[in-house]
Amino acid sequence: MAEVVLFHHAQGLTPGVQTLAETLRAAGHTVHVPDLYDGRTFDDLESGIGYAEQTGFQTVVDRGVAAVRGLPDRLVVLGISLGVMSAQTVAQSRPGVAGAVLVGSCVPPEALGSAWPDRVAVQVHGMDADPVFVGEGDVEAARELVDAVPDGELFLYPGDQHLFVDASLPAYDEDAAALLRERVLAFLERVG
Image 1 (cartoon, helix red, strand yellow):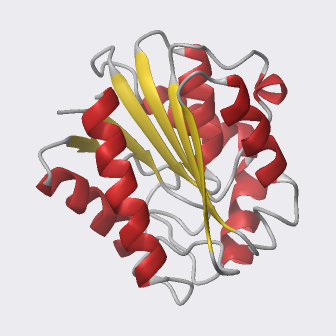
Image 2 (tube, one colour; image 1 turned 90 degrees about the vertical axis):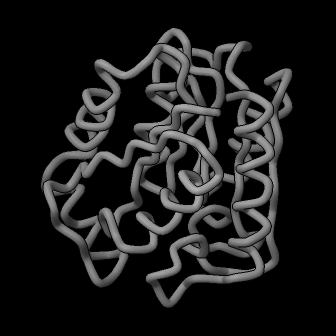
């Protein structure tokens, strides 16, 4: 079973993020869900992004990096949207990370200061008409990443919702989220 760190999106540690963690736990995985917003959650994406801007995006990422200190070396990191920044930073800088799951976002690895480690398997998930994932170029970064990594996969789902995996938000898409969960669980079995 895998040791997983799940980094929440810009709306904070919502009930939907906790539900995803519980799903992974029910499959036998150990899941850590750090709260990078000190208990704050936001009703909409813009307010959550505003909080991250006010706090400092780097501060939020640094909180994510700090959250993995003391955990076992072999980890799988999972980031949703804004949480991808923490997940990618940990995957690219911490020895022992076995895999990364990036949902709704992907940053070119060089933008985080290093190449993607060949030893770290990666899955990227997003909706094919998401104005953030597709419209802001993350899908192109994802394509380049999965093409460059020996164990890389990109999954696109039909739809235009950004936080489609969070069951507590209006953007939730049950069909896409169910397929994502299935693929993530298979990934954890393989790399964990």
